[in-house]
Image (cartoon, rainbow, N blue to C red; front, side):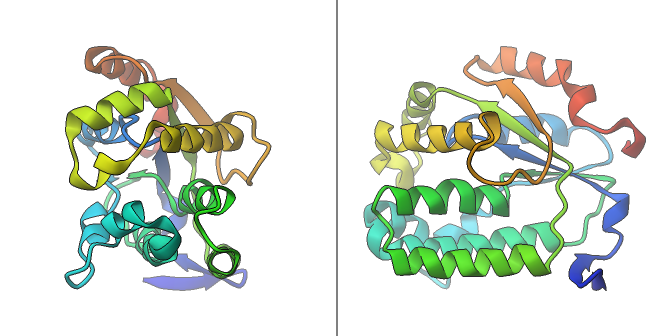
Length: 228
């Protein structure tokens, strides 16, 4: 349920929960990270609602956006904004919620990249920005920690080719490089868009076993002990 606090809509009981967002480039290892921590008790894991982005009443706006971003960018990103907001505002079933990306990276990384690369018309960008500004002004979206899986674009590109998702076959290295740079500007250099939470950086170019080791080594930094 939703209630109002200091003029903002808030999810009931939000002050009793911790929210951790796993951020990173496409194929940076976010799903592996979430799967690892999903085995910990008292944690709720939310992956990106990709299945929804692939099927909106029989349409696939994710594939359409990759094929023709100038035409379909606003269509996909409007729906991404809606579904990510729904993720943030849904009732939390455990003391800690760990979620894949956030409404903030949807705007600061992907929408802003479409616009700056010339693939989104200015009017589309203006409309999406107005929506985002209204949401973040009028709705409380608490995030306690951002875990940034810092991965080179080259590593992401190799992983993309290995996992063979249909929509991702058209993604070039240059796109991953631009997304990487936006993440670096936002979470490392902190010179672009506002940060909603502190950032923990985990180097993620490593193989699976090394990544699992790093997750375990950083467990106490990621999971607030007072919630578990």
